[in-house]
Length: 313
Ligand SMILES: [Zn+2]
Image 1 (cartoon, protein in one colour):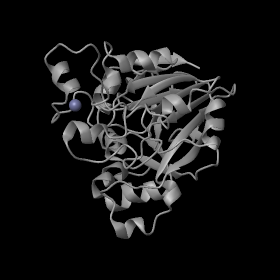
Image 2: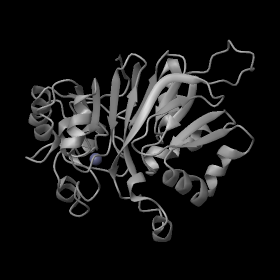
Image 3: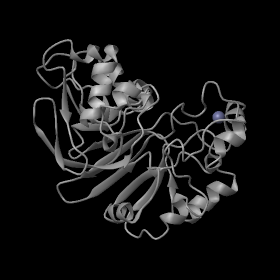
């Protein structure tokens, strides 16, 4: 299985347009020891010809242009409109995870996998997404249930040979979802982790928003070859300390990297998977390659994802 990390930052990217935190400020002034990042976006393929997006980020257009494997090819009989992107699998309904769907509205056939709850939020409550349904066989929505494995098919129904299984991780829907709508949705369909498996049994775990780590989750992670894990915040009160107000990491559905209950400590026992942090918020001090937090993460055997990384599992 081929994996591309097209973007590795949390919502808002790095630097974020309205942020003057120490990281964003020094990146803009050219003194930061580290790299800018677009909003988290991963793509997977079994044959390097047909690709599935995990989510659809607001930076998708530039991420596609920066990735030759995702450019249209002129070898089909379909004219000039073509895309190696077969579809997308949605892990939640956050704006920074679904907005990119609107950037793929040019009548390209795609299959989009989502839980029933996420599909209903996107298609029934947000009328702009009707642009994805202007003609028959444009976007084909396919529901999946957490826990059940399903094949990733392109819009024409051809099998990519990749299999996906979603783990229910969080019960909170985005703030834009009305309370009335939320009362009709299943809590277990709100926020998911995705396990993608190749025909040879290699497994990628994509976990960009993990509220807490329990033993069942540890077992799933230990069965993976590569773990892309929630690196949003270094500490639970990171936003509050930097902004003077806001929510804790826990309130936003993210286990922090540091502290006894954090992911560095809780996942230290993992042996099998290559461990990579993704979805890193611009405030996170581990982005600073000259800082002690960055060094601590690397010394613990973790990697910190950068835009443009790609690898074979
Ligand atoms: Zn910032």
